[in-house]
Image (cartoon, rainbow, N blue to C red):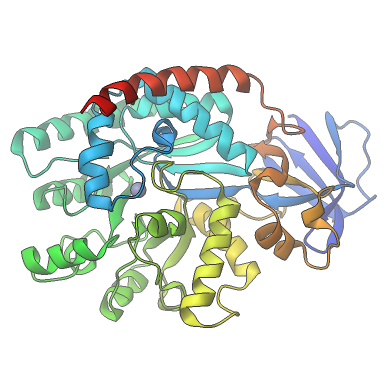
Length: 428
Ligand SMILES: [Zn+2]
């Protein structure tokens, strides 16, 4: 069993030695108390801090290929006119390269686990495993209420689920109906019973925009949350991305059922979907609130520290309360709560937890002086402060170096140029 010892590293306020054995944190002791003899790898933590790896609870990672396309339009137009036509051109190899870039970006900014929903999931799964990241993989179930497409999705689900039996322990299979405005009621019912029978997590978009809410009222006579509750989807096995437009009844449903809700503040702001995420209400009602970046076409980066900052600033301003989302809670929202949503024993630097951790380079202006580490991390720094990342007890980035990153940048540019053809677009 491989061992890693990180010596004299800052854990919030105290200097510690952190010993990792295999894929688990074995012990956390006062600095200088764990001997270095017999340890496979010793990391000097004297200029570093240790934090749990972030859990990006809602992503479409290969959308790195679309970073910067479809700017300045609302969600509906963005999807129909920009994103879906490009996505129709994708194949597994293209997704693989887009996802490799996403993994580089996530690792470089301290994320160790991501919950993905996308096309050609084998491409993303292969990229994540090669880069050493933990992930939940699902394909986007989108049927536009057409029976032949529903049948095709059913087939795809069974095939993908079967194939997932051969996946590594880093990767979990889930099922992802896109949203209530693109997925038929009978599909949601089918997915729900399939997921329950097979112990799978369900990952969907919920209550993202005002127009989704209006449409649900018009078509179903109820809110999006009430509609999915009626279909039996609400449980602690559901990850509901966005969960932004909620009534107090909706919040009660999400809370009573212990649903995992994912705040995606940068994406919500940029698509002008809304900003009054009901963090306190959801938390107090019993929902598990997590944090995500969403895809790079709407949030433009996969930096969880950036998302934490936006989430905190937004809560403070719309509630007119500078005490909204205290930093310690915010850290849990970005790590521990996400791990809980994905049924992982991660998100804390404590013995027995998975060795999914990031080391922060403290030799940067943002960390001087260091009156309050978390305040520096969230409000002064950004994801580029991350120096070293360990996932499942393996070092996947050290001193900001990830093997093969230059080749990946070059390859992704080639693939992205093939999918998004600017010359053609300009002629139109
Ligand atoms: Zn999304």
